[in-house]
Image (cartoon, rainbow, N blue to C red; front, side):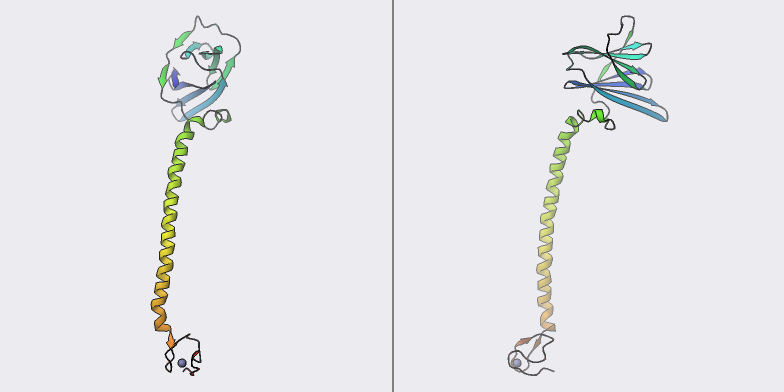
Length: 189
Ligand SMILES: [Zn+2]
């Protein structure tokens, strides 16, 4: 489950809790420019939906997790974990809403440990489906190659009698290059 909050027009913060990790993605989209930065931090499992407060520096995300309250500061595209509890009593809470999924971010290595969890499953299924198709095609190829072999031999059997020479003395089949009949020794023209 992901949450999204609009800090300012064109600046969205996506929050997603995956196991012990929270991924925070700051997406700033201005006309002609899109800036995205992402971070994933070990925060522990959320026990309550995240909250976002506007601060003079930008925004602070408050996460209530099994390991206690965590605060993450977002300044533009900079995401940093606050080691001390900020004073938020005078800060305005920014509305946050549930989102189907955080934007896909694969560019950052920090995303690697948690991103595979989601895309893996459909990809595996896709591979299986794709694996089946080449098998079917392989069988098709086998049939095709078998068919072409048998049609070649059929073809050669059809064409060989016209090429094949027969001894006009004893009637045995001869190789075209034979100069004498291999059966009766008749000299061939
Ligand atoms: Zn002969």
